[in-house]
Amino acid sequence: MKRVVCPGSFDPITFGHLDIIERSAKMFDEVVIAVLVNKTKSTLFTVPERIEMISEVTAKFPNVRVDSWSGLLVDYCEANHITVIVKGLRAITDFDYELQMSQINLQLKGIETLFMSTAPAHSFLSSSLVKEIASYNGDVSNYIPATLLEKLKARLALVHGGN
Ligand code: PNS
Image (cartoon, rainbow, N blue to C red):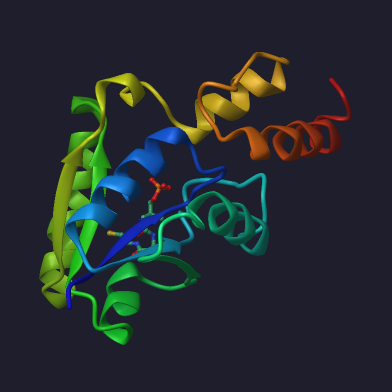
């Protein structure tokens, strides 16, 4: 059985993430979406909130499950008998950082990274951009699932006090 991990911050999960997850689920027996800590980012949603949102929008995929981890990704992989990480690559701007991470993960524990090119329709999409657009009351309904729109709006209103 081939189990792979799709790691990320998912703050919140977007159609870009979902595209990679859905395509991975067709290729592998089991896909674990791991909500991890990216120390370079501050998040809008807590880890349990992100797990709940991801679980809700991936419930239709029988071989996808959601988990979280607060340590190194390679340690998560080792503890869960996972040898392959799947990541989406949107553009050349992702490449340097993703290449570095994949090489470190390979060197640390022999964990391989497979890069999947993002569908062109999502090549510009990121959770950060979605949050920025939504914080100015812009329409993000093409970028995140409909069930998450209200949650995002409510959280931004709480954080920014409606400003
Ligand atoms: O969605 P993101 O924020 O681009 O995902 C990055 C993430 C969370 C996968 C990365 O920061 C990560 O793997 N964090 C866990 C800690 C870790 O293993 N750091 C070393 C990576 S070389």
